[in-house]
Amino acid sequence: KIPKNALTGWHQYSSMVIFPDIDFNDHMNNARYNKALGMARLYFVVQSGLWQCMLRLRVNGGLKAVTIRFRREIKPFTRYKILSRLAGWDERSLFYEHKFVTSQKDGEFVNAYAVTNYTFSRKSALKPLDVIKAIDPVVAEKGCHLVPVLQRLREFEQASSEDIKAKLPGSGARGDNRLVAEN
Image 1 (cartoon, rainbow, N blue to C red):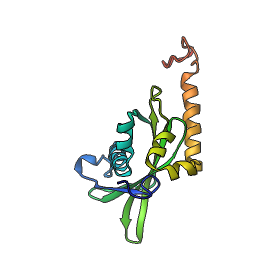
Image 2 (spheres, rainbow, N blue to C red):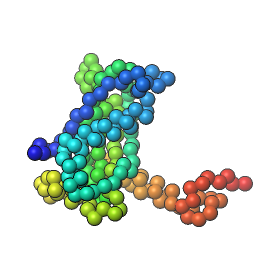
Image 3 (cartoon, one colour):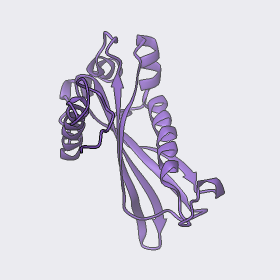
Image 4 (cartoon, helix red, strand yellow):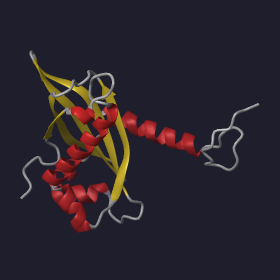
């Protein structure tokens, strides 16, 4: 049984910065944030019912983009939690919102904010809305209005994709991603 608000509510994954996570600046290294996000996403998709539904419906895809804004470092041996939720969807992607949170003397602080984009395979007959409907028809009926930060992220992804596909100066065919120095 999937809990009420499983898709729209925040899910918590907890961890701690351990020795292998520390860089030369004496804080959690940037790569560790992505690894922790992977665990938080996995925890979210299992707890929300997305994992079971996508397996049952044979939907596959992959992580398309991760955007992280670092606000304050997380020091060694600090416990932190990642709050994750489904923030929206479009025709091909699910967007997750994540907050890295630590306890401070005066309350909790969001040390980093991240948005991830999980895109369904082009071969998939189903769309994100089909999966949302299968889990929570009420959420699907309300629809999805991407919050401004997600809308800007989607616009950035589209623009950068167009830039990558564009012909680069001095390169051969369209989509040739080799950088060529101009004389």
